[in-house]
Each structure stands twice: as structure tokens, then as C-alpha cells.
Amino acid sequence: MEKKFLYEGKAKIVYATENPDEVVVYYKDAATAFDGKKKGEIENKGYLNAQISAYIFKYLEKQGIKTHFLELVGEREQRVKRLSIIPVEVVVRNIAAGSLSKRLGLPEGTDLPFPVVELYYKNDELGDPMINHYHVQALNLATPEEIKYMEDTALKVNSLLKEFFDSLNILLVDFKLEFGRFKKEILLGDEISPDTCRFWDKDTREKLDKDRFRRDLGGVTEAYAEILKRIKEKAE
Ligand code: TMP
Ligand code: ASP
Image (tube, rainbow, N blue to C red; front, top):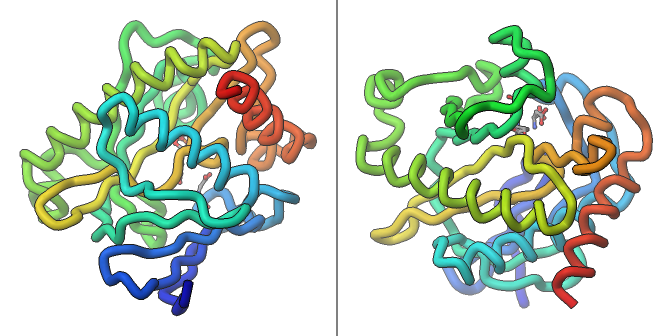
């Protein structure tokens, strides 16, 4: 397959293919946090996230969620539909952690009575500020119908993934989704991995996600590998 470099993000490189409707995404080992202020590498992360994300997208597709995912090509590359990304990140939270704990003073680990949905403006220069429906309209980032579809889909994804990870003895604490336009549809895009979700072991509450990198907890690769191992065991 012939590939032409399109652009490079913090964690992935995107290549054009002969098909103008498709791109190939290469997952890097590079890791950043706090809007790129913290930089590092997580050994083998590209491979682990490409595989984990592929399993999750395939699972969601099977459950009726429309995603950009087409197939894994090689160890750390995915062929996906080429989206025009909507610059609104949708976060869903089941348990208080991270920025929600900080903002609202809820201790990390507090169960939320129902899933909490938040929107963020995808803009690195501004540090991805939290926004609401008014801001989305004022900035003309998406139509009210598009935002409703994204929020409804995010809640469906939450139900599906909460149950899926529960069967792996993992708590889905929170996660971030991105969506994009493709022809007349909106598809789930980007990745779903320990970079974009918080996963805690159900028995020990040990962190199995990027918080190990953000907070210098060590054992980062091992945590990502544990997630892939449990997913694979279930898939077999
Ligand atoms: P937060 O608690 O830092 O707001 O993060 C909420 C969830 O969103 C967590 O699972 C990590 C994920 N996330 C990203 O995927 N990208 C980001 O840039 C940020 C800030 C969070
Ligand atoms: N992905 C974001 C960054 O690099 C933030 C994060 O995941 O903590 O800056």
C-alpha cells in the first residue's frame, strides 16, 4: 500500500492512501500529558494502543456503534475512514478522578450517581478548555443535532464498555471520545486506549492507564500490556 505523510500529532502519524476516503494511522510510543507540557516515551505503547483500540472499535461496531475503524494493518497501524474531526472532545465519567476531582473537590474514587458528560474544546493552544452547549453554538463547532448525537453515542459507548471491562475485572472510571464527519454521517474516531480512558483493577483499584505516566507511578508499559492481555484472554 502506498502511503503519503499527511500530518503528525502527539501520539499518532496519519498517512494518506490511494483511496481518498481512507487514511492509515500509525501509533507512536511518544507520550505527552498536560497539553504537551510533559513529554516522554512509553516503550511499546504504539503497538499496545493500536491493538487495544482495534479490539474496542471492533466490539463497538458489533454492538451497532458507527466508527471510523476498518482494519489493523501491521502491528501498530490501522486503516480507518478519513474523517473531518469535530473539535469537541466528549468525556464521560462514572467515578470521580482527575480534573473533575480537582474542579469539584470530590475525592478521587467517589462513585458518581449517574454518568457525567462533559465537553471540551479541542484546542492545544488554549489547553482544551471545558465548554458547554452555548459555547459550541457560539464558536460554530457543531450543530445542536450533531452534539446530541455525540452525547447520546458517548453514553451508549459508556454502557457497552463499562459492561465489557467489568467482565475483565476492570472499572471504567472515565474516558474521552472524538467524532468526525464522513460523507453524511458522524463516526466515532481517534482511539480508545489507556491513553484516553482511566482503567482501575476492580479488586486492587490499581491504575492501569496513562495516569501511571502523568503521575510518575512507574510500570506504565506493564499496565497497558495488562489491559491487552485481559482483552485477548476474553476474545479467545
Ligand atoms: P481529565 O480528568 O484529565 O479531564 O480526563 C478525563 C478523561 O479524558 C481521562 O480518561 C483521560 C482523558 N483525556 C484524554 O484522552 N485527553 C486529554 O487531553 C485529557 C485532558 C483527558
Ligand atoms: N493528551 C493530552 C496531552 O498531551 C493530555 C493528557 O492526556 O493528559 O497533553
